[in-house]
Image (tube, rainbow, N blue to C red; front, side, top):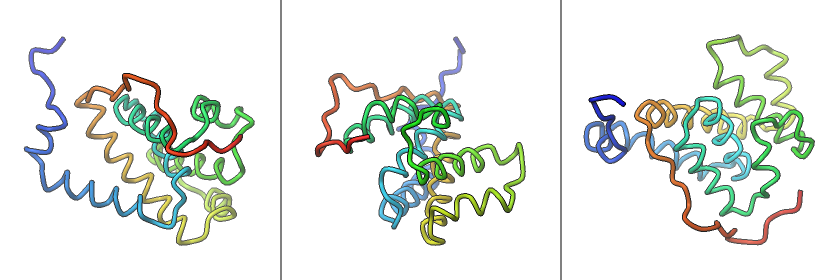
Length: 165
């Protein structure tokens, strides 16, 4: 264990308040956008898994459960290609998420753009890209500072009846 403890979420807010507030504002803009809430959660979960951010992965799994997203779908986000339960639109969102999250590894091709554009309007695609950008920003803060994941103390009940897979 390091002799230099990492800063907490609260300390980050204190030290970099303007940055924190700007990221929160962007997060709220995405949440209030024309992009459906379920693809937003899938994007947040998948990018957080890729980036190894335990805090954000757990936070967005908690939110998805509260929204009523089904356990099998949430359990299979990491292996969505083989899961067999994701819609073509969800697969397009997850593929786009992986491409943008791993941008340093490759160029986003015209074929990649065409594939996601077949399932999202230009407006939705702009917001989908913003959703990927904002979760990657949060991951790059929460993961290196190792924020403790918000593990629920009890089973999270959906706010409404979950959709069937």
